[in-house]
Length: 73
Image 1 (cartoon, helix red, strand yellow):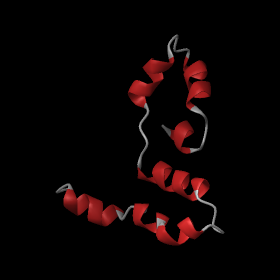
Image 2: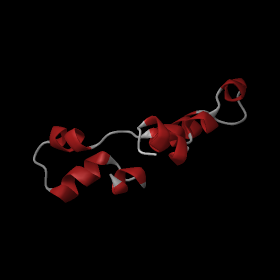
Image 3: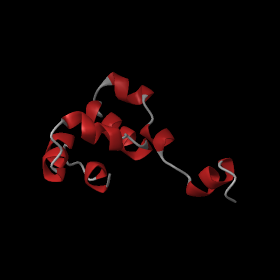
Image 4: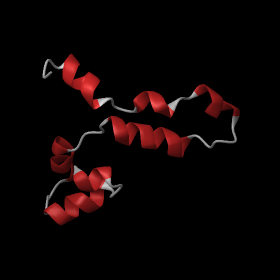
């Protein structure tokens, strides 16, 4: 997941791990909130009208709030 979060493509990670089938890698990989936020920022250029309607800040994680929601604090 660290490599995936750093932007390394899953096919390359799959090869490094020696998985014979790409689907094996997909079992372990999942897009967390930070990956989704970065994808939105990359997909929508700032100079388009759509950009004013998208707020990537809403995908930032407040760790303390998340702990409260999960009953860890």
